[in-house]
Length: 354
Length: 140
Image 1 (cartoon, rainbow over the protein chains, first blue to last red):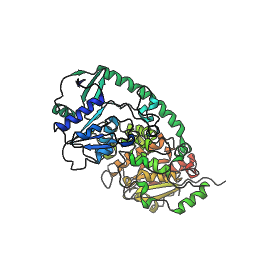
Image 2: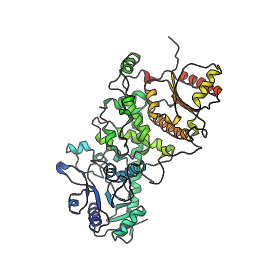
Image 3: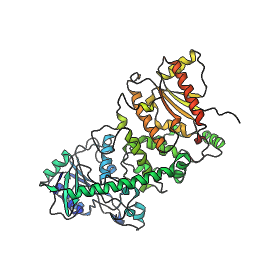
Image 4: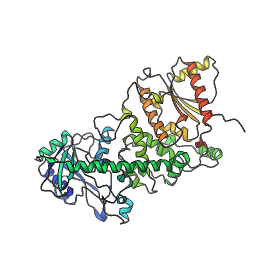
């Protein structure tokens, strides 16, 4: 595997900025979608049509303010005009693929540019002024799901990576190769050090994740364990709102017809001794897992949004690993592989039939 | 103390399994009365959320029954149903809940006897599992 060396760039940020500006200036794309530095240490996404606004661009913000796939799907409807460059983290690129497969966006005229991701700081810690930058040496500075992320690089159409002291562009798709060629990037550079780093960190993260999932599983085991974990849920549904793959305009839990009648709560209070109100907390979370865990890319956005500090993202992604394994599916990996629930084999899953 | 009588919710597809249940009835086959049938147009109409809802409201067992693979009235609904059911069952399993309380069976319109067998088997299985703790859990 070889990359294209970007010799004039000394950092990933520098290289990302240079590519964005060049792509707009040279007319390779008409728009650039990228997070920018806003007031009060915020990082709103902007869609730039001219190079000037890109001076505020922050392609690797310390926090994930809005999931990039969500930003992208809002500008890539069925009739997106012109070519677009979207600069985002690998998990956002993976979510973008899921969103496209769910037919909520169209990536045909989009080039997704990613980078070696340093991880993101938990939003609450950042807001408190506790941690301002992710420290790759200190997992405690990262969000819990970032600590176990194994997809921290090599996503999208083109990925900018560090191999030793060098910055290189690694095209991952035909679109990425075309984009690099249109920018006039060429040459071949060694990726050995990057590959070694990727494998080493990947293994370490896999171990961290294994341990974390195991202990989460013990904590949440059974109905009472699960009820305890979700007992602080305030019912804001923020986890669903910020989730890039939860796209339904009307969620099952909000359907008027399926709201439990008062009589059901009164009955339950008699039969169980007491009934939790408002009801259906666990139903919401389990229903959500059944609906979308297959497409969960473990971006951790839901967990950042949860005001009650519930490990929602770790739970959904833990479950998602197991549901996706049924179909040997990896969310966000292959744009051409159908979503597991939109296809079937006539001979399969016989263990589930009685 | 009264003996535990399981309450099982059965989602039966209109074209095969509901007709199979009907045949069992008109053939006067005796079977346990623990299953509460709910007619759906197709096994794929059953959103996992409906199963989870029944389960969390304390149903001791939930059965989804549809046409045999290859025989779906809508051609391939039951294949989709099988995938969805597998996902839900895996969710339930990985959360450490009792996945044995969920069952998917294929019962054709001519299989009155099979309908009885499924109801008998499932009722006995659920009877052994005992009451669904969700019925007594207050913080759901």
